[in-house]
Amino acid sequence: MFLFSCLFSVSSMSWWPAWLGLEFSVIWFFPLMNLEFMKSSKSSVWLMFSLSCLSSMGLLLSLFILKYLVEFNSSVNSWLMMSFLFLSMKMGLPPFHNWYLDVGDSLDSWSFMVLMTAFKVPSLVFLMNTFLTLSNLSLILMLYALYALYASMAGIFSYSMRRMLIYSSILNVVWSLVSLFYSLSLFLTFYCIYFNSFCVFWLLKEWNSLKRFEETILANREALILGLSLANLAGMPPLSMFFMKMKIISSVMMDSQVSLIVLTTASLISTTLMLWIYMSIFYSSTLWKVNSFYYTKSVNFSLLKMSIWVISFSLVSVGIALTFM
Image 1 (cartoon, rainbow, N blue to C red):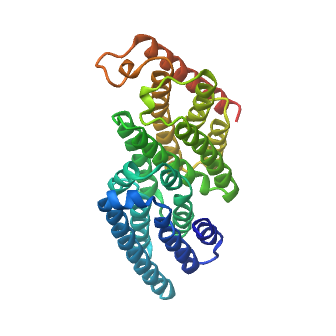
Image 2: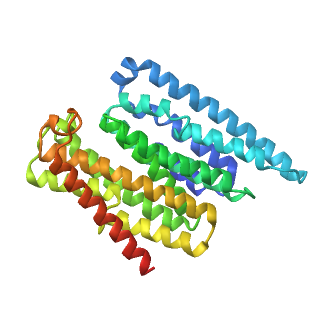
């Protein structure tokens, strides 16, 4: 029922069934939660439920007012901005992301995977439909540029695997919205690649029963698969996520909208910072023990040198790809 609600919301042709599908997807997400989690983390469940109800009522109210204003040819930008804020609250975007962090830290593995992937799709498509009716997108696009930079900086100072993945998902939401500006097929391709990469990484992590990912040294084959899925999530060349981001950048450059170019530049900088986080976690888990990177004050020089080489190679690849586009 949860997946059906998501598909119903995405395929709707008007805002009313799209809103219904969005709300049903949130309602059907609660039964997916583990019963033990709901008993032990009542505060997180109630926080999510309360904010979801608040954002739903605010979104519905703003949509009714928008319909009234459109009939009388009045200005609708302020109410569209309200819709944008309520959707950001529902998706857990900054500055409304604290509930998302608390719930993500407390969920069981299956619910966390759903929260990070399919849960956001109806809100993303609804948000894009809101964007299409705005006459001035510059302010919102600049806000999303700040979201991307904030997510990367917050991820650097995060010591939790789940929180790092949550901040990474915020950055991927920004990339998804940029892709939605050009075509639904581009968005679906990008999000399917992100979905598959995240699921492979998370299922492998849970299959190995890694309570603390940083404390375990993996076998060579498992480390290779885990490393490739992490590298794809980070957008490293020559993997599929890298080429999808290059396709998005190419579309932005051809469109020549200044606000979109600024947003894409901020996303590239944030992706580079997130690349350091991904590589540091991967190297510290496969090559060293727990005290090699995050849990000591001194950073291992070999790890630092290896990560700098990886980031430099990625930047050079981006430059070469942009040259031939």
